[in-house]
Image (cartoon, rainbow, N blue to C red; front, side, top):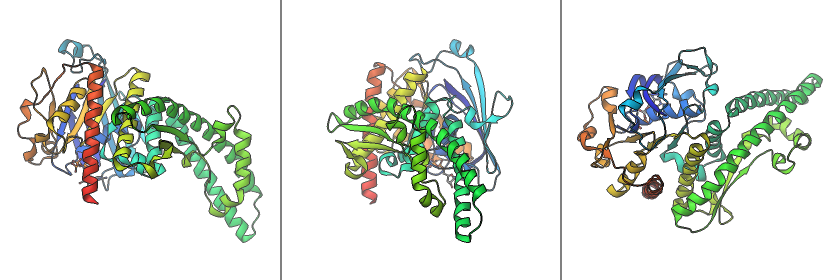
Length: 436
Ligand SMILES: Nc1ncnc2c1ncn2[C@@H]1O[C@H](COP(=O)(O)OP(=O)(O)OP(=O)(O)O)[C@@H](O)[C@H]1O
């Protein structure tokens, strides 16, 4: 599977842009701030319904505009190790057009092949992608919201009804919180509370029902990721201290009481009722979930070094890539945002080697000088983002000699990629140490 054309209207810095991609390696090059990350982020949004950079979709819309549109032509190319494919193969491929519209007001919508309008969540997961980005370290060191963001993206790819359940829960949670506030105000003013109380009972029942469903989905996803995560980390760190990924659900009754956690959660809600009314918020529920990452049994956030946290974040992303590839039997589109800077040529070559084996890889870099020129049969497709943005950009000079080698095995390329990405991790760590 690969995207042959991406067209954006009023998406972040892009009022209008059309980009043609090829199967295999695409390198988006341009100076800082030109909008390279915005282009690959649009692919991430179409794929998972969310961006790792924001908690809502509002910042994705160009400032002052009501709507952003992302359109992609997706070809159903096969994952056969020859990512670039032959001209004959491509002639028989099926193209599907996905369109997402992100609205400042109202629900985000989508259309497939110009068909009828559906919710964006209905097409989420159709174009699997995994992004490796400079923000990945926050997965370990950041607050629980960044880990929930990762979990949401992973589950959106692996659990068919996930996004619908998540949105339903968010809506129910909002209604329930509004009632809690109403009850708090009524308690302070001595107004009657009967109607609000019976409303709360109904919304609490729905919140538990939907929250349990979501918790179970998240639990399945974490179960699938946990094994590969520990194994990939051990490979990257050359053994060392063992790491573990576990799910820390707010509704921990789901893990404790198996088939019938509902009455236990209901009791829990009764116990915290005064606190919820006093604060006017839902004090328990999946909006408070977290992922627990431990190093030798201790919380990584508190005990791991910067380098270990980066490596754990990389292992998480690689685990997701592996699980998506194995579960869906599709090579996810790989996004490598700003991974080349400060790497030596050997590491850069390892990344390109891996990239050349995927159906499609989208790489952003500020300078083409960072991308090694290799003798090979497959040429990377270089996209001059400055030209797309209508500005002259000296960073693109020398584009013609770039290619990807493809001599080793798939497993060898995966391992070399992991090794090269670990070097990216170290370079980022050095940069953040220099800054602080
Ligand atoms: N909602 C928005 N409306 C308009 N412009 C936006 C919006 N959100 C971000 N931008 C602009 O997009 C630009 C950043 O784009 P992006 O992050 O894609 O740059 P980049 O080319 O990847 O840069 P770097 O190489 O530094 O990572 C900034 O100039 C920012 O002001």
